[in-house]
Image (cartoon, rainbow, N blue to C red; front, side):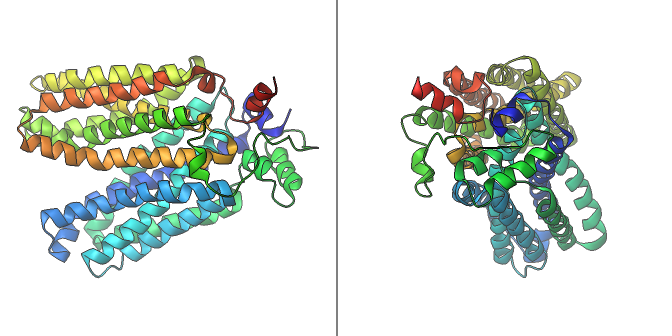
Length: 447
């Protein structure tokens, strides 16, 4: 039994949980980054004299950078390694945050927001893979769910820090604080973060046995005496084309559809809920509370998904969350006139849609072999980010076309159902086995 197979089958060591913890911290940077720009938007608008359209472009620049980072940087992680790509990406995020704090114009700030987004996009593509590969089959769903919850933790703590810092030192201090924290995390990663076991076994860099055995000792596993026969020949070119080979084409198409639809629903409810609740009859303050209930429910939703996957298959749990999420969206907007019920329903919607995000992060790495896993995950996240970008735009256009809040929530509910259908159409054997290695595929081919 090879090292990755032992990781899949064994109990998780403290070192493995430490690796997951590092990935959680990195995901929290995403949450902080998004909220930092949102909380400083008014001050930035005053300083640079921005119009509403100009501010909208500035707010979107980070998301665009994240999408490009996931699509463009992820394939390099399958060539140079997950660890180097994480360090490069965190370095980009650090530079973007620090330079944003000294920007002299909105254009300059927008450029540094794109740079920060590039880094975060690369981070997310790699950390999702690393957290998956260092988790055992039994605890993988919970580990990835905790990792997903890092976004909410970063958003909550980052938002609180942004409010305090901005009140005392101005908006630039928010980005300076973020840059310093990210730089500190970069140092921590350089010391503690290991390379992916599957990447080492597949790529076989110099001193590969020594590096694998160093990891084995840290996680309490026997040392490796020989390397497995690679299932596929390591090729340094055309990583993207591998996503559309006969064995991957179906999975790629379905996971892209599911990620796009899930992110579309997630960013719709998180971006538009306060305003739509007001159009449905609530006051502005009540609409804000409704939005906060979504965020609060979301923190528990990721963890609930992970706990359920300890007992039930992660793909089936994801499908259930998608169906229930669509149903509760309709119930949520229909109860806007009954305040207490609407707030409870809002918490449930946030819980379920965040659980869907956790589900996609859990399912996706297992669909691809080690040689193309970061590329597959990165492109899936990048396609999902496109859904996040277009969701507010489409919603605004539909509002201008006189769609009501109820019509919008029903429409988005249908989109989330499409995500559940795409997951249901995935081949069960790819996900139900829970294996994250290529050896099983190789045995099947030989048979």
